[in-house]
Length: 296
Image 1 (cartoon, rainbow, N blue to C red):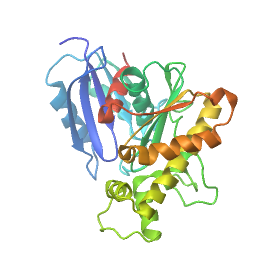
Image 2: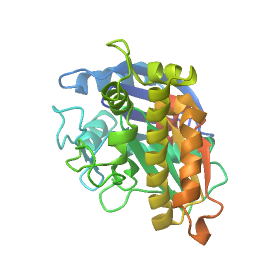
Image 3: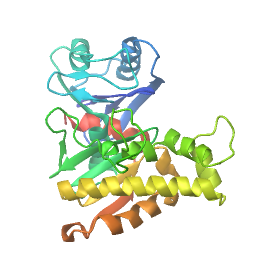
């Protein structure tokens, strides 16, 4: 096999790697849970299990952030042992002489969906991952846009409740504090929802689909928060499309219907009249496809 790109997707809960061909198709992939302590050995292991001696032409890296694409470092919020970790140079040492590029995982998710998923045919889009938190990335004029440091597109940290709950970012009332899965479950419990101790967003969605009032309200709140965040990003960046994936988005219209309804209220500028919302298509492969696209 020739012209294969190695894609690495590093996150707080999983480390994934894949060989990706020039069409953007994943040839071979592997993933492991992110260790609680220093995860570098796990990175080396998953990369080795995917490469298996095949020639690699370049390496693209998606990482949870914040990232610093100028210095090539990553400081994932959920990986305390990696603060300003030089991930780009560490991977470069594994593949001397090859081009190695780093971007935030939200940017790579958006780029992956743009290249081979729900974002095909668009030029100005935001990709969102609504899961434990709310991540995002931008594709502007057909190209990934990371901004000054590589962190542009963090749509989950657009403020939707000025006096809202504290956020892990240090602010208050971010979209993530309303629409992140654990936050939704916590809000439902405070509102009186009786659920098992291990209940997560999937259990909450099942209860909402069964018609339970409080879980339905939790998804209504989440959809409104995501819709307001999209409206703000769209107004600033003149977007035509928002692609939404992630575990919470698996609830389908429970989330998407209030998102679209909120956009009708909050995205009122004339140039946003055609703003569209689509479900992501690539699932867990989006970040890998996008990481590969950084170097291909």
